Image (cartoon, rainbow, N blue to C red; front, side, top):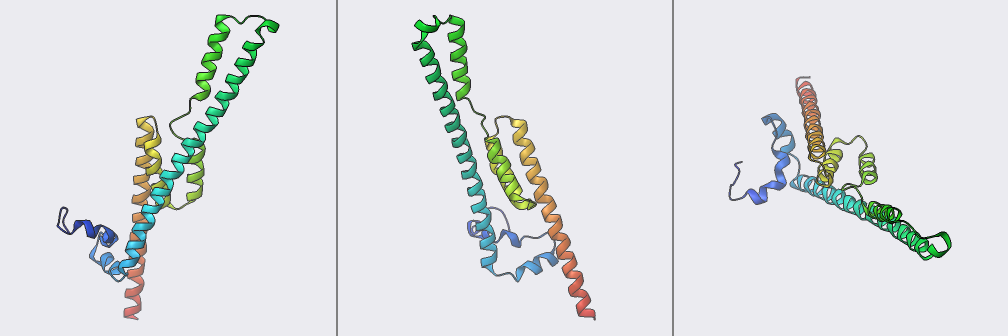
Length: 181
């Protein structure tokens, strides 16, 4: 299988057949094509789900911040309307209120609560956690956080591949023992 081949656009779906050894490839060769297709579609759907969940988290954050800002604006306007009762507000008080209103509208680029929720939902599934981390990375404002998330995702995928390779080895040993017995 070479990159850039004429049929590359249709071969991506059977990428799980690419194994580090011929023995491992022989084990997965018996899987029906639909299993590989379903695995790819499942991965794509998880990635899309996590992306949408993150976008929803951002929207929820912005809605909460907008609500907080609206309440603060109402409070400042009421206070301004009552200035004849409580006295005229100083320029410093007005500037502080303006700053509070601006701060109330600011939200982080990433929705931390949604990130925790997604990672918790992944449990100990390294594949799902890796996909979630890859989808969370673009929402990070700082490059070092993006790099850290993508690095963790890569490490999780490497560990998962190692576990699969171990399972393949055990399976081959068991099949070999059954043939010799």
